[in-house]
Image (tube, rainbow, N blue to C red; front, side):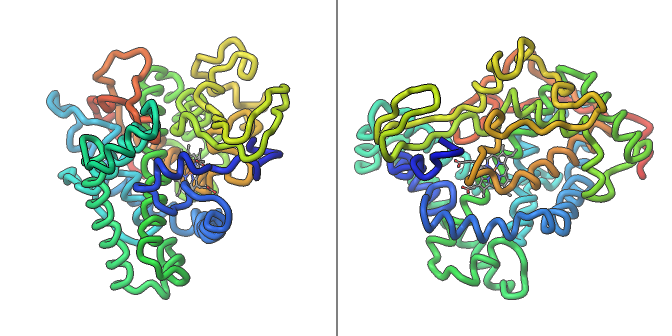
Length: 408
Ligand code: HEM
């Protein structure tokens, strides 16, 4: 479905209708020429050069000037419980806005400002996912027509999202976009349709904010459960970067094999996008002989695939980064079709390098400075409905600064 018959498995109409109000014609919700155009434009912005040149500095600033001061401000306070999931969403929201739109929403400032945009965004994502869970699409369509219940809420959330997305576009236009190299400016050179620009803004926010926050949340949940993995990450960082040193360049990340393994292993167990569906265009036969009729919804399911014994062995439920390392300690990348956490094939995630950069920088910086204690004793996280995996109830933690911390 992802590899040899890509053209036969588009996103399909049923899903583009469900997500249409929220995502419009944004990259996640289209096929064909609209998809090709956005993919081409975005890939120019998300290539390794841009990540190295712009994203690394943005991420470093966001960690050094916002994330660390925020955690330090509650360190050691018995009433200083932080919802780490909320903090990570603010972090990734600031990062993606600055990188994609050249604007700084300052969500991670120490006062943790309330954001109507973020609230409306979460609500629209949750309600869109709930549409897909109704017995028949007729249910939500009738509610939408009559402006009732959840559909009324959805309409209100989308109205707010539209106003704020238009504001992003207006500000970018006011600041001038001709000489800027961010993603939105690039699109503004060619796209004049305001609604289409709005859809592009929303899709990139969804792509860059919720996925990274989800990956960070489950990673820190696992690190709290398996402290030996955190110690091994720091040990490797000390030997590669020097004792207590920070990452000073993008290139240095390439030598942190254990860290890469830990990040991949975390997303094997807790992929931010747990499943993803396509629709079969013409009758097809899968490699195992299964007949797939035209119009059938076909889902690949990274969450389930990460837990299949035949794929990952008897210890598939254990968090064991070593499974990603060769005998000489170097990282071994698995076949993306076995590990479709970033999808695989022609529609593979464009933000993978950006995501890995954020995950690794946050992990090293926070593990170096803080001890993070979970305030929940749950053995397996519960997720709430949404387009990306979200811990229901968040990730409440108490934070304590390790001392003495020798800053580099
Ligand atoms: C850990 C973090 C991330 C994960 C697990 C992830 C995973 C995925 C997956 C599974 C898809 C396919 C979705 C679909 O077709 O329905 C996707 C697509 C995409 N991702 Fe990511 N993503 C992450 C972070 C990011 C970031 C940070 C960005 C942007 C800066 C980004 C940009 C995109 C874009 C633009 C697409 C659409 C590709 C296309 O349709 O051709 N992603 N991602």
